[in-house]
Image (tube, rainbow, N blue to C red; front, side, top):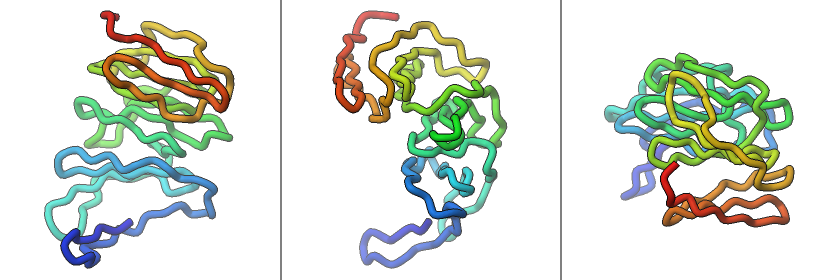
Length: 183
């Protein structure tokens, strides 16, 4: 990973971090909160939290068994990360991790892959199996308050939320839900 100065394109710093084996995909986007940046990938790269204070970044924590995102980007909410740990083809765990320490607060093992959005304090999780799950984003536990099978298997595209409408798709079906009414 490296950062480039916008004005002249000069490399500002480099941080050695990449998958340890040739990977087919490692698509999670870095998550930036204040002066912290969370980076994550599967295939042996793992996750790391860096602090930027000018110059080279400071590594706060790192590890391969904390929150290694394969293709879905984790979500930060109130100092906690919510995301999928593990490779899609090997089975993923849904997790909550304390941002500043890397401590796993809860893990739903064998959950499978998926993608999620945050709407106010609610996680909207679309599993790869096509199940839509709503749960409060809390480090205490993962407790769904609504769930429904909305798509057939192989729903890998990120859902989109616009003006209270949730759009989700599988490889051959598109659905839209009106979420404007209170939960």
